[in-house]
Amino acid sequence: MTGDDPGPLIRLFGLTGGRARPQGEMFDLVAIVTTVGGSYEPADLIPEHRAVLWLCRRPTPVADVAAHLKLPINITRVILGDLRREGLVTIERPRPVAQTIDERIYREVLHGLRSL
Image 1 (cartoon, rainbow, N blue to C red):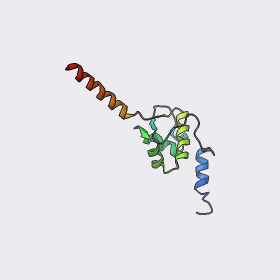
Image 2: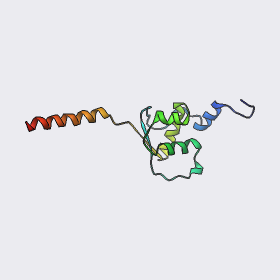
Image 3: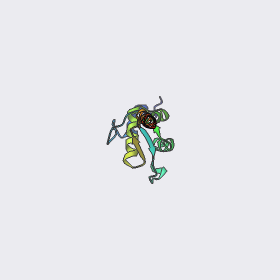
């Protein structure tokens, strides 16, 4: 680290404005982040915000966003919370696939039994 480099902790503090938790509803590592068509000026966003908006054009789990940004998960959550508050991303719990499959199977079995 050089004399001009404030170090990674100062940089992380600056990214979040000293916040360690996102504002609003909490979300976990498997929550799905998707960019929405909000209006914004790219020049008004920090590079991490622009990176998230580009990455999440397709639904992306929070854990993958953190890995792509190479940032700790709590910092990533604050960044995502800010983008959500600005209406630039949605963050949703993943839909349980197993229930959808089970329900479909049950309907097929019921249909099969009725046709007997």
